[in-house]
Length: 232
Length: 283
Image (tube, each protein chain N blue to C red):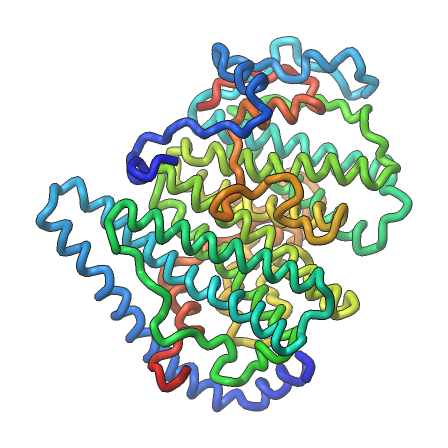
């Protein structure tokens, strides 16, 4: 961030993390990103019934809330799938209890955003988790780590565009709980990696917030519904 | 001395603590005044500048308030790492490394805020409290002599700091500072979750502090610290009841955990002042 512009009213474009240039280009090109459509071929999820017209994330506050709602749908569906499949065998009772908590938190976030959006909410998304061996602890937690990290960095990266103060406050309340989830999942994988491991925290001890195009590209591995991204 | 003993001792000295809390309230007033005075130089400057500069100075006051709190948190981890080493408190190198990691992040947050404020207005950033900080509640806690207590205070500071930063988001709507505050609070939340797990581990699982905040429970039976958790029990968001929302099996407990609640500036100042030394003779 340019220090001379810190108090300007116009948010500047986020600096994109290295390694995402191709995705970012896709996201920026025309503001359109059809996520998931390339991944349908490998899908064996019977819930998979993508809306051919997809869902639209508009550039206003409604679009931003719908973006959060989309991520929450994904996270809640993933954690539910863990329990539907049966939690990996090595899970301790504490792990099961805390993973249950996380699922319930994600459901709470999803349902609240849906309720606030009302008739402006995007449709329920379809997911494909076929690539994940839910009986393998590392496979499950690696996915959870990815989803929690993009949950945090995604909200952090988009909140500057929110106009409505109540929405901003709400996203702030959700983001830190996502970070708590992320830290717990990371510690389950390798204790002590709560805020490190693969550069989730950058310069100045700040979380590396991400643009919607980067986040949606990462989420597209699991979302089969087409998402049209016109977020700021 | 274990935490239980400390807490029992505290509960037996309630009257004394009440007197101390009265003193603390006086102290708070003096510190609030001090911060207000500190803010005056650039507030006065603003009146001679263009009118447009006023917003900037309000923003600087807010950032300085956050920095004042941040200095206190950063100083805690610096002292904790030193005491942990000197007093052989750390049960493992992992534990020491975690404190060092968090110390470095907290120092970085203080440096970043200082840099941000000074870039906007040279030398405007507040400095750490000249008389130092007291993390023992006037000697009631063996914060730097008992590992469990050191962890408990760390958790309270971390959880509280998240709420302090969150509380100022709406001062910077559509300003890039929003991103910075969120990026700071989420790193603190990661640290808080880890500290909470460390507490559970060191207590053999019996502490039962989850990585997230359940209702308004601190997991520290010290009423002084309750202020850092007041309001965290909220189960209503945006006027909507989260318990059982959408026909889903979301308990009140999960409903409260799913959202971290902001603190106002006044609430934050009240907490900050529990940790400030009033005069040099106290340090």
